[in-house]
Image 1 (spheres, one colour):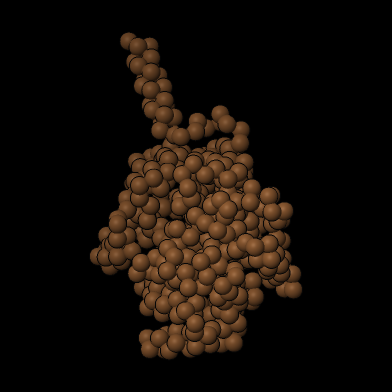
Image 2: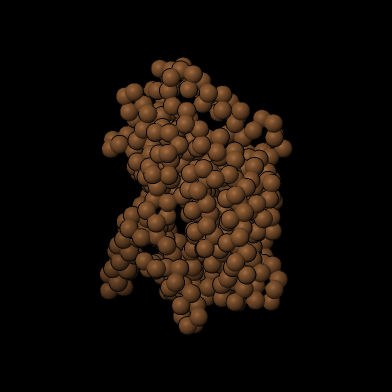
Length: 453
């Protein structure tokens, strides 16, 4: 009877293990490109959380939710915890309601550092354990930048590291069609000076260098803010960028005006822009890159974030039919290094527990990144991952840009007060391409900012 019972237990155990394995996208130990050692070490250190519940709330819905759940499955399998993910269409408002009502999730994942700063100041976030900021500083490309992004003042007024960066977006990219470059004999520029020379050469050859579209319905103007932010990082230090974003440096400061006017060298030059300057504000940003693919092409270059291939013609193969290069820096300013503009999500503890602490430790494992990297739409500045796990060469190249950056800064308009970053800044850029000077626009935006006080 005892042997029968033991056999039954063994069969049950095998069945349970196979069910767990079936829940995992990639079987542990079977593909050498994944860092399974990190998973095994995490499992040894935190495999005693059986039955503990962990609620994770975040912005991901649709395909991204499915992909994140494949990552969460490894945390559950390693720890024995029961982590569940949920989201809301209005997740920003929902997390505020939940924290104020005392019904916060254990983990909140948000793409808004400003919102996290507000939650921290009200005592709704738990500081991450000692040493976490040092870990990020050491293991992430431009680590200081990421630490700064997740450091806020708590309810006691003291700075602490509250938010762990996980999943990044990259904006500092210029898109082109390799075949067009090859036929015309153009080379990818390595410096901003070379980018201007290339633009001039395209004009000389009878072509148009750029497609630029600022149209986006009620959000018209936002693509220009990315241009200005990228140029700000290439003409000034990260610290200057921070002063501008916080309004310690005014919008009509000569440094800011100079950057806006630099954008004008691209967007306010009829010879540089497809359709001429008059088309810049009226062209929808989703339609703008289509000019790259015309025969002959309406343009050769397009500045936009890593998401833009969604709006390329159906069937476009990245690396073959379309490719990108890093938005170059000025050879005259080598001291600024290789800055990157982007965005991303930050992970914070809103209701502390052993499982919540373990989840943050899980995010330090390459596996927590590689599982999503190997599927779709995930970038990380974590230098400890195997870049060969990226799902394709385009993601791999973008990941390398992130992990080797010397400076990372979050989208500035997203950090500004909503009436500025998602209001006066947008409309100001439309006014700028419409004919106003950088100084006029900077002064008007600053006036709107002053009106908030």
